[in-house]
Length: 195
Image 1: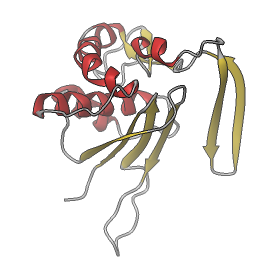
Image 2: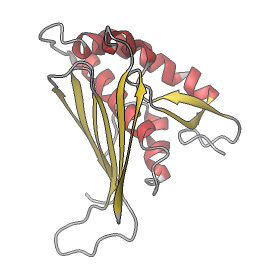
Image 3: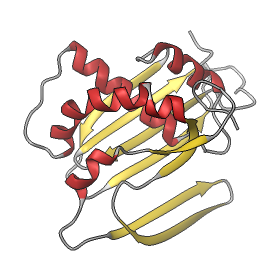
Image 4: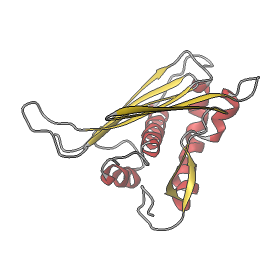
């Protein structure tokens, strides 16, 4: 198997979609809560509920070098900016550097969340992000607030994007992701092929 970002072949590591540093902020005093996973596919919906600590989603699509290297460095840069928003400690003003860090983290998190999705979005999204390691091209990030601390959400969907009057592409050429962890929410959209 190859890493979705650097495309090197080798052993893939377990990558937490949500960083482990958010978990203490989300833990409920009564212990593990109920996690519900809903998978929506053409032809039906599959739903499973189980006892779990919050923000425990793991994928195996990233190599050790990426996971322990640039991705870990990004997590450390983002932590001090994101944790006050996750915990809703009050209004936050983002300067240009912090805004870029938050957007980079949101794109990385959306791509990781979608890395095992079937069908996989075009590999170019991963390759371009790996090369830039910053917001790039046709990707947009919106940030918001949720009222629920103990909730986390991952809704990743490949999509097809076209101009009005054009035929839709045969396969996904974009994605959208709604992500929330604690009081922090993101909407990330990326697409290819339109000017």
